[in-house]
Length: 240
Length: 239
Ligand SMILES: Nc1ncnc2c1ncn2[C@@H]1O[C@H](COP(=O)(O)OP(=O)(O)OP(=O)(O)O)[C@@H](O)[C@H]1O
Ligand SMILES: [Mg+2]
Image (cartoon, rainbow over all chains, first blue to last red; front, side, top):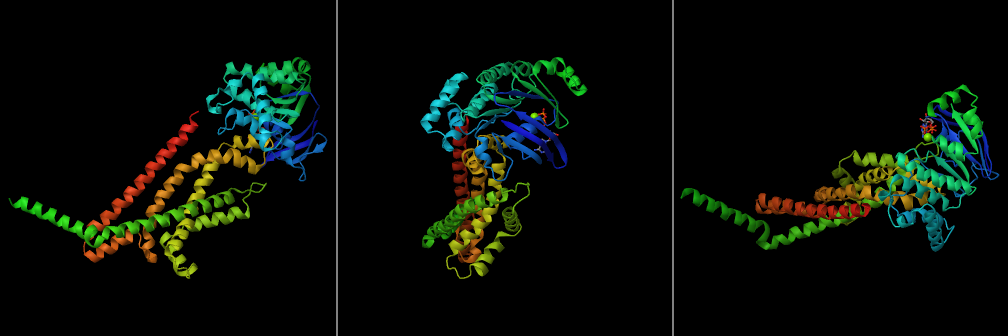
């Protein structure tokens, strides 16, 4: 579903991604871990071209998307993204946050979008917040709404960049729970996280990123019980 | 009783001066006419300033994919530099005697000049207001498939508006006072009227203080209105 070929990204001389190759298949839950600054976010953001790759290829659904002739806005409709800082639209109510894109992009009629929003809100237990503004919500609530906002576009894949890192510890669980439920629906997911429990439980593959490459890739059980590279062994000894 | 007499004299002379400055020959009407000119120029300039400033701001914000400024951004930058780097009196004289030489309406020329001048300052206000909106808002919009214009329109600009309004109001207040130089192009605004009357009556104090008081009242009213508007906006933010 997503194919990454020899992806490089430089920021003004800082060579962050140094040749990433990966293939995400339909229905997989790829969990990406690695030390801070290793390029996890950059990798994820290259997948929907929030960052423009310096070189290499990104393929989505059989189409090369880092190509001048591709309408990236069209592509992004099918790729949801959840950010560390939620990034709910502060000027809009929760309902409008969720329905803005589907309605303005003429994917759904307003009534239809609202109905879908309410269904999704019910799924995360936040129906009563429909008319609230983001600033009145807790971090955990915001992140659940952010997930719902992406889901309202019926994406084919969901990208998560440390969705629980900005949360108070007692709110991490409620967000992970929503993500688990989403995983169970068969959604294809790429998740950057420090939650090793989630990686173990939900991941179909775990990737270790370090020094701008995918240094190791394995099934969760192998990944955690039998790490091969010394860097991963060192990393795991710190985080587990 | 010497002192009583001199106080009495003083009061009489003040009364006299007041009479000369405002009452005699219905002079007070002149002040109001002057104020009218001041407000006309200010209003025209404010509207034009917002339009020009907004256009300049978006020009200046435009970037190439490489992150370098576009030609439009450079042009806007140069315009802003020139306006901010030269005295507004000179800008006014240049417009009146050179660029728009054939135009008859001083109000129009002054309004355009101050509008172009104010636009440079408004541009920076608008630009700063837009840049102050968290980048994450844009990224979230774009990640949903909204294009740049849609993201700006539905997400960034409504939020930037709240940042922009207070300094924009201040700019308008400054503008009202700045227009006090339109006498240079033979416009009888409030300041010029006051100075003409003081020449005519050989008495400077009353007309000049009178004009100052009127300016003060106008700007005070404006800043009170602005305060109310700001509080309204903040309330809608208090969710
Ligand atoms: N927009 C940018 N401009 C310049 N440098 C950047 C930019 N974004 C990221 N970098 C640099 O790229 C490197 C990798 O950053 P990235 O955010 O991808 O790391 P990460 O693995 O997500 O780290 P963390 O776990 O802290 O989120 C860092 O050195 C960072 O400073
Ligand atoms: Mg990161």
